[in-house]
Image (tube, rainbow, N blue to C red):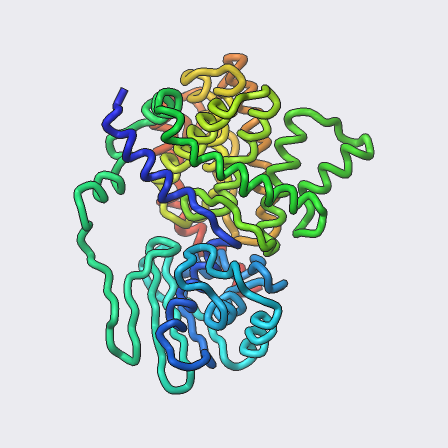
Amino acid sequence: MKKHLWNGFIETVKKEVVPALGCTEPVSVALAAAIAARHLKGKPTQVEAYVSPNLMKNGMGVGVPGTGMVGLPIAAAVGALAGEPDAGLEVLKNITKGDVEAAKLMLEQQVSVGVAQVSNILFAKVTVSDGTDQATVIIADGHTNVVSIDVNGDAVFIIDPQPATTADTQSENIFAHANAHDIYEFALNVPVEDIQFITESLELNDALSKEGLTGNYGLQIGATFQRNVERGLLSGGLLTNVLCRTSAASDARMDGAMKPAMSNSGSGNQGIAATMPVAVVAEHVNADQETMARALMMSHLMAIYIKSYQNKLSALCGATTASMGAVAGMTWLLGGRFEQISAAINSMIGDITGIICDGAKTSCAMKVSSSASAAVKAALMALDGIRVTGNEGIVADDVDASIRNMSALANGAMTQTDVQILDIMVHK
């Protein structure tokens, strides 16, 4: 076992699995606006934002928490007026109805959002003015990664381009020395007290799921499953419960519920997809707390590992890859070992690779439920010794090679798909 990697694994999970209130792309813009506003003496009166095409795509149609509205303009405005600049992805946690009304008044003439011609996949440049002074904040390459702050033309902060320490560098590149089997061994053998923190993902995402089951959010995917079980059109059981509780959390999250999701790799939906299916299976088999923690850690770390081969944002739906992490935890909980986990991930790559990301919006809950369904299917097949083989499509015999093949598709040919998707969205 590669125990020398274990501390790096833990630090990576702590960095990538964090609370996020609302979709992380508009929240990133709100955070930049809040940080900029903090450097002004007066009340913000003007907000101008330029974002990368991918961020624009993911911010156009998604609900902004507490506002009852969708899109980047309201996120920028309410972030500037009332955001908590030190709260990271929970920047909007304390906004009030009065703040929202004031932000809405700014929208007509005082807020603008455009596309920046930059190479960064994730980029937001937000300038906030109070009529006398102005401040500009740039976030790039990570949803909370502030790279510069400028006040009245003077740079007050520029990020150090060099890694601060050797430890940081090791954490950043931890998967260069690891494979899927290393993650499996870590999750099963690390002292449980070192990973107990991961159970907070269940606490947050389950609360979001219960909120979604009220039927007041989005397309009501989770609530629809629940209603039809009650009508007798669907039977209860493991698959239905996985779909119901997982999609309900996404329903609430994508429609602006004022409850945080525990994110994974910068995405609340990826965090939900990596958490809820595993939690439902753990409850189904009456797993104890230690088993629950190990299964959740296996899921979240495997999801981060798979995502690490891909661009932060792409044309490939992130819920699909996060669900490939979930299938690892689910298969293990149902009695599988690494051979079955590898088979299940391979089958999912052969099944749902190619589901596109056409921006963040309420219908993302449908893709979350489709991915969760594929995970249950692949896990049950693997337990019976059935898998998509290395002779089929982009799937290889080895699971790590299959992951790299899928990621090559996402980072290669699907970059043009991404351009086409945004063009369709902005011109329809």
